[in-house]
Length: 136
Length: 406
Image (tube, rainbow over all chains, first blue to last red; front, side):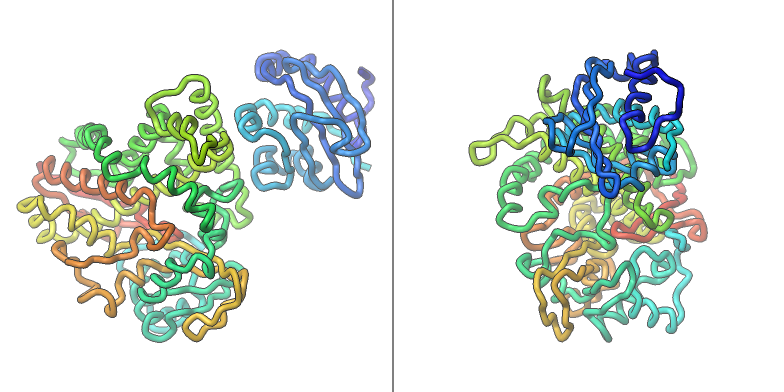
């Protein structure tokens, strides 16, 4: 896992590495995310078309892997969206809950679990908004 | 466009014609004189086309409304509002399903809402009502909607589902946003977000009840079998969302509109005080007279419906408030008669989707009228100019100042 200080890049693994660094050092997340022991695949649809598999263990990010497609590795949750939808969330133009509720970000996985932990999942996306990634 | 209207302002003939041709039940101006528009629609264009909200048909006569409700193979419930976003993430079970799927769920849910089952709730309901009335028993005037019409059905709903009463204010706020938030939320994002919060609340409740069942509706739904299978927690989630959408605001609106009428009708109030046996009939008649809920359908095929070429996929709005004032079905439809017989109103819809919660709603309304008559010697609208009504799929009242005398 990287700790270098350069800005992460939108749609690349560095974004998730920066997210992991931030979450793993965040005392608030240690509480909010303590029940999050799930694998999640984040999928940027065309034209970016890249997917990242992230494993959480009691909130701690333990693995980040770029995968060939959103279905390349089984995941508890797959979050997919067009690059514009992801950008709108990461730029805080759209709240994560709104993006999910309106289907701009689509979530596959057990709905009850997703909803029960929506606060934690939204927190992850909120942390990502603070990473100030490069978009080009 | 505002979604609140001043009462009794009236529409010019030109504006009536405009609304006949551009019907939009979200437009507050319509609600300043909606029955003038309905009358014009019934007599000149009983199946009208409106270009609003992407275009939809509008049915205003009783006979046509009844026929559409009875024909789910042509008029599907996949669409129930115009526009069709009420915060739901998936089709609402069972009202957005058509037979035979609808029938399957309805068989499961109907026993939970039977008259017998609802009657068992009456003591809780009456206690809730009395508790609320006691909070303003010595005040000379109240704002009826916030003090009674919203908290009363919300408290009963929370009891029914097994949710804590301290969530009542939050549920009222979510209801307002989802049901009445169209005018200032054209993209539907705020409604979707409110819907998400409602789903999140139910998800927590369902998770609790999966491990620790209680004597409540959610536990019953989770542990009852349907054709040898249990409902999935996702199905229970969707049913809870429907009960929330269908159960709270509708009763709030029916109560507010009923008290708006009664608050201006001293003779009717006296009748109910002196003859409480009239109250069940009064509940039916007030639901007919005010009919707060209008519901949509979507055409499943191209159909010539009373001379109008409705195409497959086009939404069709059934304006029950108009159908229930149709003189071809009701004698003196604009009069309130508590002893009206053969009151086959469409206030609870008709056909396979007839309101599942109608017995609950009836009981809530009856108990409210009985307890108000018992607690107060009289009540009346103190300032008609201050009354504000709102538009939308569930029409109602935002502000109703009511004077009280013990």
